[in-house]
Length: 289
Image (cartoon, rainbow, N blue to C red; front, top):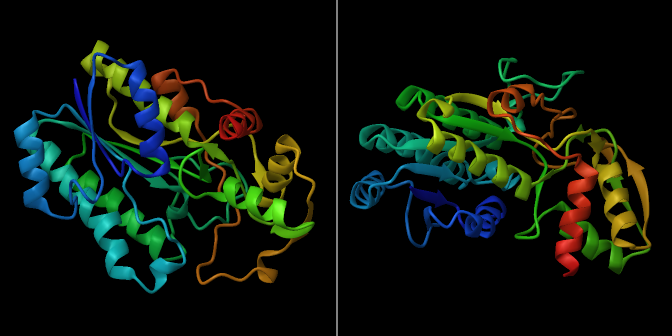
């Protein structure tokens, strides 16, 4: 089993790398922009053709949500063109593609968890380019799996948890928005779910069920709740004040409601998803170790 992981330096790619040691029979090839330019079709074609690849896990993404508004071309290349190329090449050589997408494909105006078939309506360039990537994959290689996730954090990379810990230790108090709601998601849990899907596929080719899926940790929180939990679990004394999105303006409008319905991925692959606070606690323990 040979598996290519793109975006290997990112949060999710790094978590997959950590978990890869638990699969000694699998040959992982971890790539990032310095070793494989996934926006270059010839480079991707040659890489996949030469190495007899079984799976490609695309963790690469342009995730600078606000910067994407002024850097549309780069966002388009990474979030839309690259997935199209990966889909085309995996289809050509019979490899399986697992691609990671985002809750930002939705407008965030729902009042119950989004299912995979709910109407999409991105609010900004980042969400639109990610949706374009989904559509291009389904057009080029409909036998792919697309997993939308939300509010990702990890012991690796830059993320909300690390930012809160840094600011919380520097200041006595800070304001965090309370009117944006979602499910904080430990990238380690998503990494485990992706590798479980591949394990099921190795046991039985019918175990790989193409389509769009949602994955985030269980439970619901606002960014305010998330920050309070980070300080509480980490033992950081910092007062968190709830503020509205209007008090904290950003170039891109954020979805107010990003809760995802995970029934499909749980039922299809028999995946158990941990509660967000439990996963946060594990992540913070790893950070202190």
